[in-house]
Image (cartoon, rainbow, N blue to C red; front, side, top):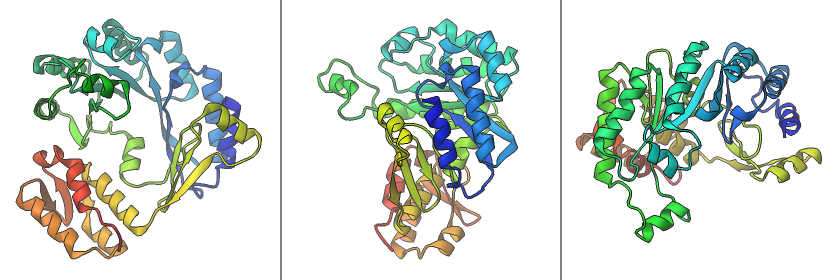
Length: 344
Protein backbone atom coordinates (compact mmCIF):
# COMPACT_ATOMS: atom_id res chain seq x y z
CA UNK A 1 0.00 0.00 0.00
CA UNK A 2 2.79 2.45 0.87
CA UNK A 3 4.50 1.72 -2.45
CA UNK A 4 1.23 2.26 -4.32
CA UNK A 5 0.62 5.58 -2.54
CA UNK A 6 4.10 6.76 -3.48
CA UNK A 7 3.55 5.77 -7.11
CA UNK A 8 0.28 7.71 -7.17
CA UNK A 9 1.96 10.76 -5.64
CA UNK A 10 4.29 10.82 -8.63
CA UNK A 11 1.55 10.10 -11.20
CA UNK A 12 -0.67 12.91 -9.90
CA UNK A 13 2.13 15.46 -9.53
CA UNK A 14 0.80 17.66 -12.35
CA UNK A 15 -2.74 17.83 -10.93
CA UNK A 16 -2.12 20.95 -8.84
CA UNK A 17 -0.34 22.71 -11.73
CA UNK A 18 2.65 23.67 -9.57
CA UNK A 19 0.52 25.32 -6.90
CA UNK A 20 2.31 25.42 -3.56
CA UNK A 21 1.18 22.79 -1.06
CA UNK A 22 0.63 24.37 2.35
CA UNK A 23 -1.07 21.43 4.05
CA UNK A 24 -0.56 17.67 4.10
CA UNK A 25 -3.16 15.59 5.92
CA UNK A 26 -2.86 11.95 6.93
CA UNK A 27 -6.46 10.98 7.54
CA UNK A 28 -8.99 8.25 6.97
CA UNK A 29 -8.40 4.75 8.26
CA UNK A 30 -5.83 4.75 11.04
CA UNK A 31 -2.69 6.59 9.85
CA UNK A 32 -1.30 6.57 13.39
CA UNK A 33 -0.43 2.89 12.77
CA UNK A 34 2.14 3.89 10.13
CA UNK A 35 5.75 3.50 11.17
CA UNK A 36 7.99 6.55 11.24
CA UNK A 37 9.87 5.12 8.25
CA UNK A 38 6.64 4.86 6.26
CA UNK A 39 5.53 8.37 7.19
CA UNK A 40 8.93 9.78 6.32
CA UNK A 41 9.01 7.94 3.00
CA UNK A 42 5.60 9.32 1.98
CA UNK A 43 6.58 12.86 2.97
CA UNK A 44 9.86 12.61 1.06
CA UNK A 45 7.95 11.51 -2.04
CA UNK A 46 5.53 14.41 -1.65
CA UNK A 47 8.36 16.91 -1.37
CA UNK A 48 10.09 15.34 -4.35
CA UNK A 49 7.12 15.79 -6.70
CA UNK A 50 5.28 18.85 -5.39
CA UNK A 51 6.13 22.41 -4.40
CA UNK A 52 5.77 22.15 -0.62
CA UNK A 53 5.76 25.27 1.56
CA UNK A 54 8.54 25.42 4.16
CA UNK A 55 5.88 26.18 6.80
CA UNK A 56 3.57 23.37 5.65
CA UNK A 57 0.96 22.16 8.14
CA UNK A 58 1.28 18.37 8.45
CA UNK A 59 -1.61 16.78 10.33
CA UNK A 60 -1.87 13.18 11.48
CA UNK A 61 -5.14 11.66 12.68
CA UNK A 62 -4.49 9.55 15.77
CA UNK A 63 -6.55 7.33 18.02
CA UNK A 64 -5.94 7.99 21.73
CA UNK A 65 -4.82 4.39 22.29
CA UNK A 66 -2.14 4.73 19.57
CA UNK A 67 -0.46 7.71 21.21
CA UNK A 68 2.75 6.81 23.02
CA UNK A 69 5.82 8.79 24.06
CA UNK A 70 7.97 6.96 21.52
CA UNK A 71 5.39 7.41 18.76
CA UNK A 72 5.08 11.13 19.47
CA UNK A 73 8.85 11.58 19.22
CA UNK A 74 8.89 9.70 15.93
CA UNK A 75 5.99 11.67 14.46
CA UNK A 76 7.73 14.92 15.36
CA UNK A 77 10.97 13.68 13.80
CA UNK A 78 9.13 12.81 10.57
CA UNK A 79 7.76 16.35 10.27
CA UNK A 80 4.24 15.99 11.69
CA UNK A 81 3.38 19.26 13.45
CA UNK A 82 -0.35 18.89 14.12
CA UNK A 83 -2.40 16.07 15.65
CA UNK A 84 -6.09 15.36 15.23
CA UNK A 85 -7.25 13.13 18.07
CA UNK A 86 -10.58 11.32 17.97
CA UNK A 87 -11.72 11.60 21.58
CA UNK A 88 -15.49 11.68 20.83
CA UNK A 89 -16.59 11.48 24.46
CA UNK A 90 -15.44 11.39 28.07
CA UNK A 91 -18.21 8.98 29.03
CA UNK A 92 -17.07 5.35 29.06
CA UNK A 93 -20.45 3.92 28.11
CA UNK A 94 -20.56 6.21 25.06
CA UNK A 95 -17.10 5.07 23.95
CA UNK A 96 -18.13 1.44 24.29
CA UNK A 97 -21.39 2.08 22.40
CA UNK A 98 -19.37 3.64 19.54
CA UNK A 99 -16.95 0.69 19.57
CA UNK A 100 -14.04 2.94 20.42
CA UNK A 101 -10.95 1.08 21.59
CA UNK A 102 -9.75 3.76 24.01
CA UNK A 103 -10.86 4.49 27.56
CA UNK A 104 -11.68 7.80 29.23
CA UNK A 105 -8.33 7.64 31.02
CA UNK A 106 -6.51 7.24 27.69
CA UNK A 107 -8.49 10.14 26.25
CA UNK A 108 -7.29 12.36 29.07
CA UNK A 109 -3.68 11.16 29.16
CA UNK A 110 -3.03 11.24 25.40
CA UNK A 111 -3.59 14.98 25.21
CA UNK A 112 -1.21 15.59 28.11
CA UNK A 113 1.40 13.30 26.55
CA UNK A 114 1.15 15.13 23.23
CA UNK A 115 1.52 18.53 24.86
CA UNK A 116 4.48 17.34 26.93
CA UNK A 117 6.20 16.31 23.69
CA UNK A 118 5.75 19.76 22.19
CA UNK A 119 2.57 19.24 20.13
CA UNK A 120 0.83 22.52 20.88
CA UNK A 121 -1.18 22.46 17.63
CA UNK A 122 -3.85 19.92 18.59
CA UNK A 123 -7.44 19.34 17.64
CA UNK A 124 -9.88 16.92 19.21
CA UNK A 125 -13.26 15.61 18.05
CA UNK A 126 -16.37 15.58 20.23
CA UNK A 127 -19.79 14.17 19.38
CA UNK A 128 -23.13 15.42 20.70
CA UNK A 129 -26.67 14.17 20.14
CA UNK A 130 -25.69 10.75 21.48
CA UNK A 131 -28.37 8.56 23.11
CA UNK A 132 -28.91 9.49 26.76
CA UNK A 133 -26.32 12.32 26.67
CA UNK A 134 -27.55 14.89 29.17
CA UNK A 135 -26.82 18.60 28.93
CA UNK A 136 -24.74 18.38 32.09
CA UNK A 137 -22.61 15.61 30.61
CA UNK A 138 -22.17 17.51 27.34
CA UNK A 139 -21.08 20.61 29.23
CA UNK A 140 -18.56 18.55 31.19
CA UNK A 141 -17.09 17.12 27.95
CA UNK A 142 -16.61 20.62 26.53
CA UNK A 143 -15.17 21.92 29.80
CA UNK A 144 -12.64 19.09 29.99
CA UNK A 145 -11.25 19.99 26.58
CA UNK A 146 -11.13 23.66 27.54
CA UNK A 147 -9.33 22.80 30.80
CA UNK A 148 -6.78 20.74 28.84
CA UNK A 149 -6.01 23.89 26.81
CA UNK A 150 -6.65 22.24 23.47
CA UNK A 151 -6.63 25.10 20.91
CA UNK A 152 -8.96 23.53 18.33
CA UNK A 153 -12.20 21.60 18.75
CA UNK A 154 -14.34 19.91 16.10
CA UNK A 155 -17.82 19.02 17.35
CA UNK A 156 -20.22 16.94 15.30
CA UNK A 157 -23.79 15.88 15.84
CA UNK A 158 -24.54 12.17 15.65
CA UNK A 159 -26.36 11.47 12.40
CA UNK A 160 -28.38 8.38 11.59
CA UNK A 161 -27.65 7.29 8.03
CA UNK A 162 -29.94 4.96 6.11
CA UNK A 163 -28.97 1.32 5.62
CA UNK A 164 -26.76 1.28 8.72
CA UNK A 165 -26.92 -0.81 11.88
CA UNK A 166 -27.71 2.32 13.87
CA UNK A 167 -30.63 3.17 11.61
CA UNK A 168 -31.93 -0.39 12.00
CA UNK A 169 -31.74 -0.16 15.79
CA UNK A 170 -33.58 3.17 15.80
CA UNK A 171 -36.34 1.88 13.50
CA UNK A 172 -36.83 -1.21 15.68
CA UNK A 173 -36.94 0.88 18.84
CA UNK A 174 -33.84 -0.73 20.29
CA UNK A 175 -32.28 2.67 20.79
CA UNK A 176 -33.49 6.27 20.82
CA UNK A 177 -31.30 9.13 19.66
CA UNK A 178 -31.54 12.72 20.83
CA UNK A 179 -34.44 14.77 19.49
CA UNK A 180 -33.83 17.72 17.18
CA UNK A 181 -34.56 20.09 20.06
CA UNK A 182 -32.01 18.32 22.28
CA UNK A 183 -29.43 18.42 19.49
CA UNK A 184 -30.10 22.13 18.92
CA UNK A 185 -29.82 22.90 22.63
CA UNK A 186 -26.49 21.05 22.87
CA UNK A 187 -25.19 22.88 19.80
CA UNK A 188 -26.22 26.28 21.18
CA UNK A 189 -24.60 25.50 24.55
CA UNK A 190 -21.42 24.55 22.70
CA UNK A 191 -21.44 27.95 20.97
CA UNK A 192 -21.87 29.74 24.28
CA UNK A 193 -19.06 27.89 26.04
CA UNK A 194 -16.70 28.29 23.11
CA UNK A 195 -17.30 32.04 22.94
CA UNK A 196 -16.98 32.44 26.70
CA UNK A 197 -13.57 30.78 26.60
CA UNK A 198 -12.00 32.60 23.67
CA UNK A 199 -12.66 30.17 20.83
CA UNK A 200 -13.88 31.46 17.48
CA UNK A 201 -16.40 29.49 15.45
CA UNK A 202 -14.74 29.79 12.06
CA UNK A 203 -16.88 27.00 10.58
CA UNK A 204 -20.14 25.54 11.88
CA UNK A 205 -18.49 22.49 13.46
CA UNK A 206 -15.03 23.94 14.13
CA UNK A 207 -13.73 26.23 16.86
CA UNK A 208 -10.23 27.49 17.49
CA UNK A 209 -8.09 29.86 19.45
CA UNK A 210 -6.54 32.63 17.37
CA UNK A 211 -3.95 31.25 14.96
CA UNK A 212 -4.99 27.61 15.33
CA UNK A 213 -7.56 27.33 12.55
CA UNK A 214 -7.08 24.19 10.46
CA UNK A 215 -5.36 25.33 7.27
CA UNK A 216 -6.29 22.05 5.63
CA UNK A 217 -10.03 22.16 6.26
CA UNK A 218 -10.12 25.91 5.61
CA UNK A 219 -8.80 25.21 2.12
CA UNK A 220 -11.77 22.93 1.46
CA UNK A 221 -14.25 25.59 2.53
CA UNK A 222 -12.49 28.30 0.51
CA UNK A 223 -12.61 26.19 -2.65
CA UNK A 224 -8.84 25.74 -2.93
CA UNK A 225 -7.45 22.94 -5.07
CA UNK A 226 -6.34 19.69 -3.44
CA UNK A 227 -5.17 16.26 -4.49
CA UNK A 228 -6.11 13.11 -2.56
CA UNK A 229 -3.86 10.07 -2.58
CA UNK A 230 -4.86 6.50 -1.66
CA UNK A 231 -8.08 4.44 -1.62
CA UNK A 232 -11.29 6.54 -1.50
CA UNK A 233 -9.32 9.81 -1.66
CA UNK A 234 -11.00 12.77 -3.38
CA UNK A 235 -9.37 15.52 -5.44
CA UNK A 236 -10.63 18.92 -6.62
CA UNK A 237 -9.28 21.46 -9.09
CA UNK A 238 -12.05 24.03 -9.26
CA UNK A 239 -13.86 22.64 -12.28
CA UNK A 240 -13.87 18.90 -11.65
CA UNK A 241 -13.71 16.40 -8.83
CA UNK A 242 -12.41 12.87 -8.85
CA UNK A 243 -12.39 10.04 -6.36
CA UNK A 244 -10.25 6.95 -6.08
CA UNK A 245 -11.34 3.34 -5.92
CA UNK A 246 -12.39 2.48 -2.39
CA UNK A 247 -11.30 -1.16 -2.53
CA UNK A 248 -7.71 -1.57 -1.30
CA UNK A 249 -6.89 -4.53 -3.50
CA UNK A 250 -8.50 -2.90 -6.54
CA UNK A 251 -6.58 0.33 -5.92
CA UNK A 252 -3.21 -1.43 -5.66
CA UNK A 253 -3.98 -3.58 -8.71
CA UNK A 254 -4.77 -0.47 -10.78
CA UNK A 255 -1.55 1.20 -9.65
CA UNK A 256 0.49 -1.90 -10.55
CA UNK A 257 -1.14 -1.99 -14.01
CA UNK A 258 -0.48 1.74 -14.53
CA UNK A 259 -4.23 2.37 -14.84
CA UNK A 260 -6.21 5.32 -13.55
CA UNK A 261 -7.42 4.77 -10.00
CA UNK A 262 -10.19 7.35 -10.11
CA UNK A 263 -13.48 8.44 -11.62
CA UNK A 264 -14.04 12.07 -12.61
CA UNK A 265 -17.06 14.36 -12.41
CA UNK A 266 -17.03 17.63 -14.37
CA UNK A 267 -18.71 20.42 -12.41
CA UNK A 268 -21.18 22.61 -14.25
CA UNK A 269 -21.49 26.33 -13.49
CA UNK A 270 -24.53 25.45 -11.35
CA UNK A 271 -22.50 22.84 -9.43
CA UNK A 272 -19.72 25.33 -8.79
CA UNK A 273 -22.20 28.01 -7.71
CA UNK A 274 -24.00 25.64 -5.33
CA UNK A 275 -20.74 24.46 -3.78
CA UNK A 276 -19.69 28.08 -3.20
CA UNK A 277 -22.99 28.63 -1.36
CA UNK A 278 -22.78 25.40 0.64
CA UNK A 279 -19.20 25.86 1.82
CA UNK A 280 -19.23 29.63 2.23
CA UNK A 281 -22.29 29.73 4.44
CA UNK A 282 -20.69 27.28 6.86
CA UNK A 283 -17.76 29.62 7.54
CA UNK A 284 -16.90 32.94 9.07
CA UNK A 285 -15.76 34.05 5.61
CA UNK A 286 -19.32 33.96 4.29
CA UNK A 287 -20.46 34.05 0.66
CA UNK A 288 -18.93 37.00 -1.24
CA UNK A 289 -21.68 38.27 -3.54
CA UNK A 290 -19.39 40.35 -5.76
CA UNK A 291 -17.24 37.29 -6.45
CA UNK A 292 -20.33 35.22 -7.26
CA UNK A 293 -21.69 37.90 -9.58
CA UNK A 294 -18.40 38.23 -11.43
CA UNK A 295 -18.19 34.49 -12.07
CA UNK A 296 -21.87 33.57 -12.46
CA UNK A 297 -24.95 35.29 -13.73
CA UNK A 298 -26.94 35.13 -10.50
CA UNK A 299 -30.72 35.02 -10.79
CA UNK A 300 -33.34 37.21 -9.19
CA UNK A 301 -34.82 34.14 -7.46
CA UNK A 302 -31.53 33.66 -5.61
CA UNK A 303 -31.63 37.28 -4.39
CA UNK A 304 -35.26 36.95 -3.35
CA UNK A 305 -34.51 33.76 -1.41
CA UNK A 306 -31.60 35.15 0.59
CA UNK A 307 -33.48 38.38 1.29
CA UNK A 308 -36.31 36.24 2.67
CA UNK A 309 -33.86 34.49 5.01
CA UNK A 310 -32.47 37.87 6.09
CA UNK A 311 -36.02 38.94 6.95
CA UNK A 312 -36.41 35.78 9.06
CA UNK A 313 -33.14 36.66 10.85
CA UNK A 314 -31.50 33.46 9.65
CA UNK A 315 -28.96 35.33 7.56
CA UNK A 316 -27.37 38.76 7.45
CA UNK A 317 -25.44 40.77 4.91
CA UNK A 318 -22.20 42.53 5.74
CA UNK A 319 -19.73 44.18 3.35
CA UNK A 320 -21.57 42.56 0.42
CA UNK A 321 -21.17 39.03 1.81
CA UNK A 322 -23.81 36.68 3.21
CA UNK A 323 -23.52 35.07 6.63
CA UNK A 324 -25.67 32.82 8.81
CA UNK A 325 -26.98 34.03 12.14
CA UNK A 326 -26.96 31.68 15.12
CA UNK A 327 -30.52 30.66 14.26
CA UNK A 328 -29.46 30.17 10.67
CA UNK A 329 -26.64 27.84 11.66
CA UNK A 330 -29.24 25.47 13.06
CA UNK A 331 -30.74 25.31 9.55
CA UNK A 332 -27.58 25.57 7.46
CA UNK A 333 -28.22 22.65 5.11
CA UNK A 334 -31.83 23.67 4.51
CA UNK A 335 -30.91 27.29 3.78
CA UNK A 336 -28.13 26.30 1.40
CA UNK A 337 -30.41 23.92 -0.49
CA UNK A 338 -33.02 26.65 -0.90
CA UNK A 339 -30.38 28.94 -2.43
CA UNK A 340 -29.13 26.34 -4.91
CA UNK A 341 -29.78 26.80 -8.63
CA UNK A 342 -30.46 24.09 -11.20
CA UNK A 343 -28.83 25.88 -14.11
CA UNK A 344 -27.78 29.25 -15.51
